[in-house]
Image (cartoon, one colour):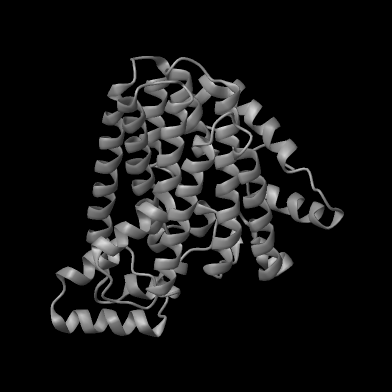
Length: 328
């Protein structure tokens, strides 16, 4: 299925070999079981990213005693689940572009895109049942349920200008952080560590995933599409209140709140928002929100102190902070 994935940062060279094993494992999973699926998989393979979720699992495994076959499978299954969510998300968001290419649903239609996502989910969960125990299947089923709940909640609150911060974080922790949290727990579990270390690795994933989504939401507002590599402005255009906008709304007086609410309801472009009378305040809230995301990443990195000191722990801490500097 897959051409070469986006190159990882140099500090992840220590897992180059196990990442290649994950790629080979994924190649086998994405062999089409019907000729009709083959061109879809070939096209979808072009959206491969940095494999951050797989890297998280492998670095934890390496730092906790070594990568096992079970870790390769866990990393691969999580990447499959992530790929399925992208196929669905682009339909929900009516996104046009991903990694500089037309989204799958633009090329093949929304129904086919959703069904391909379902096919990938089915393959992923089939693989999760092949472990000697049910832990992988249970943890990933729970995480995928959280992803779906987060997306459903977000979809039902589109257009809700008064979305609370609590609801926003509940959505983020579900739709994005849950999969990172599951990866951390499973990496530690199959390394046969204590419950305390499993909990620490899961907590790292939760905080890192939360920060990842906050930064993604910031990029959707103020990123440059050529750099980010996907459609931007979709949150604002589709009526999603993200953290910078919630924070901006909360500090405005009633008159300016009414102005922002009107712009939100009208579908005004994100660029017009920056150029309007609230542009300076919006930029300030974006900067403050970015600081908060970086605080979450620092807390995530600190939670790795439960892992013995080793090059892999340092690389995972660097990967954690790298999430805050990404532009695509």
